Length: 488
Ligand code: ADP
Image 1: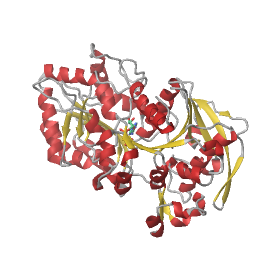
Image 2 (image 1 turned 90 degrees about the vertical axis):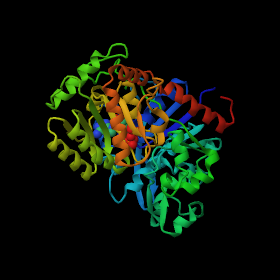
Image 3 (image 1 turned 180 degrees about the vertical axis):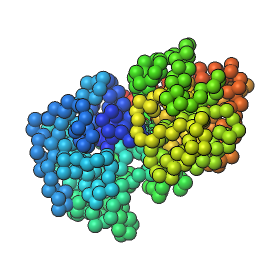
Image 4 (image 1 turned 90 degrees about the horizontal axis):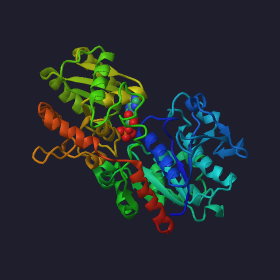
């Protein structure tokens, strides 16, 4: 298809700023669309950690000190760019120290909404100021969800956007960006309140994500199962009615994996490299991981791994129910990397104290350790309450680390239950969000672990899976083509 101008807007992009899968996805999607020949601008805030990082940021001439009025607040932004590593695609950063020179990516500050209003508006304005007409604005999660409505209101006068189409991808509906209705003018909708969700406005709130779901031309969710789940009360988090109404515009596209970054064949962050044919390196990764935490390795003892944000979404109640039992009864190890809610950090700290020779818990955010756990563990736990796509189970498969997952969202779409009769399957799944069901899946996995030959087959099956972006990017391309009325 002829090259398109695609403006991809996200609050996170690896390796610049990442708290979760969104960063991996926006960066990989930008890179792979670029490889397909499209002119892609990946737009994100210039957070303090990026400004102070190692990046060579080039100020864009003509896009400096642009004034912008956000309700009562007048501020200025400038634009700098840098190449996305290993690609010709560039990331475009919105520099506005007034709003972005702060400790974290996200804050609890009273003007948090303005930080993302600016992202949305500056993304549009940088196109205007450089007279670059996007064919597609591809916006991600609540942080960029106002763009479709801005194109019809604040920027509706600019005919440059007359043929621009918008795509909103839902990475996680648990975060909606809900603000009080008194923020109407801050958002720039004081002349267009009738375009917002009327019932919610009367109730005194405005939701960034809901506004995007109302006005984006196409909606995507990050897996087919999640796209279906979102239309139900259990998973839709209040937006299920709207998503059912727009179901003809909603498609599920599973995220790809960036195998340039996540593959034990060439991963520079792990102590030894390995291939499906020669797993000696995996053994070395396992021993190094356990040695790092001074945990006795034992001859052939299974190691469980977890790398996760520590939030209720990820199902740690089930880990708390099941894992103490497993650790008590079985000769196993568990290495956990995660940060987030106190209650879960306390739980893992206590678990480590109760089983000092079996459990290691590392808090904080550690890219390198996350790779080492993927490589060094034998089994990976993701008992999520809900999981829009999930990346770690796909990484695990490639690293020969068998995933044990709840059958929900992207986990259901990417892990296939092991079948002892046919020798097919890649992991272990359970349905009900209950400790027993999870324990049962763990027991099935440990049962198979004792059968070395069958286990080796299971590992090989997983390592042979291909969730590459080269494939997935074609689905986005086809969606853009459909929206623009062009043949793919
Ligand atoms: P989510 O986006 O809900 O957090 P995903 O499975 O889609 O879940 O993506 C999680 C990503 O974040 C993975 O790349 C994972 O390795 C990474 N990650 C999560 N927590 C940490 C951590 N504490 N340190 C390093 N990487 C982490």
